[in-house]
Image (tube, rainbow, N blue to C red; front, side, top):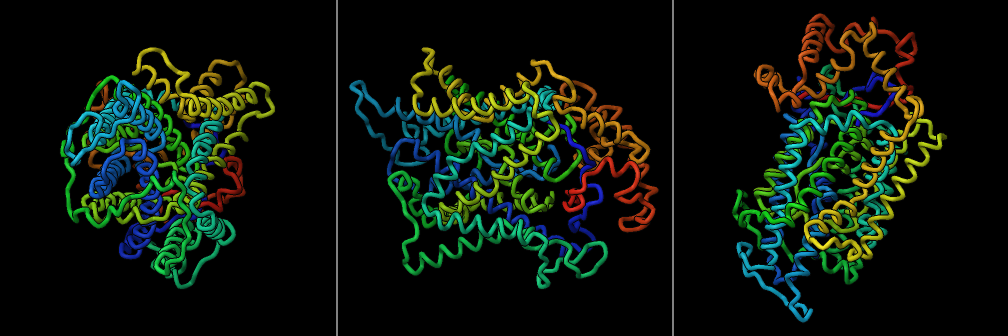
Length: 618
């Protein structure tokens, strides 16, 4: 999914402070950005578990089990994020259980709960489970083990898709007419959940949205003098980043949570919970959970691998792979980074597969996938940093080893979750719409592809949600597979737009591929001796120590799809050699061509001078 784009990403854009040489100041900024990522990630994790747990059988509340379940998810997400940012795609992507995991998990758990709680006469029968280690058939723990088995299967399939190179191949065949509807539907697919959580208190949700929009848009260029972040290279104390825009998600999040805490302390009723919302209670999970418990595989029993879990796992893998590749493109687009090479895309999916394997072995009901919300928050704040994501990953690992600390995240008001969804997923919708500019949207071919793909993606899940019994093939695993796939809007949009875009005849200009060809020619010009592949190697390359050990082992299958080819390695070596003779950052910049002169003016868009570039200084 490397659709067309016209500009050289990040050319001439201001850079965020790096992490050297003033490590104290730069790491302080990274920690603040990490806290912002952690807030969005915690909100998405709570949403996932709040929507999934009510579909499981009703049992006596075990507070520690809920907190430990959330802690295990945090632990797996933290490990997966570290793998993704170091050995995976290299993009600053936070890992969470995405909605593409939630839908198949809910379909599977609802089917298992219905079959386990109904006797021959059709009356409901409650099954109790005294401890999280029980193996009673039909109990909540047994159903969680089968859902974890589906997560384990999805991790294996994602790993196979990445190693085989299918992920990178599919990404290269996705143009603007595939990216535009897919990214738009990724954002629109969360509108039901957003409205559901905002309905607990629209005043709280609207306050968060108002503050986020004000800080990021109206006050985006405001620089507070008392929040000056020293510049790492120059050693000055001038404000290098606009504070309000950089923390336009963290400040509203923290402010609204403080307001809700004050209202609760004063016993002022501010949250209205109906019958559906009352089922989302965490049942005082903080007070009974242990302070320290290191999760390990098999503690709650090993995952159950059944045909039903296999069907749900296949649906999870397909939906999450499409969502993750879309998130890679979204992150690259928002941060104006170079195009993602196929081998980096394959590595990223492999790391997500490993994260899902770990999550399944730990007994969590969701795997790990790239977080759309965190990526959109990065685009909204225009502050992308790999070190900050890695710091947030370490914080997740620490919280994952303390269920009581992880239980504190359950105190976040439900309306805040809805506000976070509204603010972040709106960026994905806008980014998808922006891809229409590269294609001929007046073409009847393109109008039909976009309209049909998006309409069916909204129609089919709505129909199956109201009448799931209409989909019955006579074999339960096949029913679960089709239902899990057709209930995911991202799968429907991606499949239909990809199929129609690559089968319906159309010119290169009509499909929006001329801008991509022009960029490739511009990258091979005199101003960029190594082309865009040199920039990509710096942005997405493996660590230097690991890169020296891999070339000899990357020539054989299956590692050949995970490492750059011989030609790319030569270009990378040439780029390193060229860098040795370049001036230090900030020196000799008067020798560079001006933004409005010559060939550089054709390769850049005017808006890029206002957007910060993504830095990858580790």
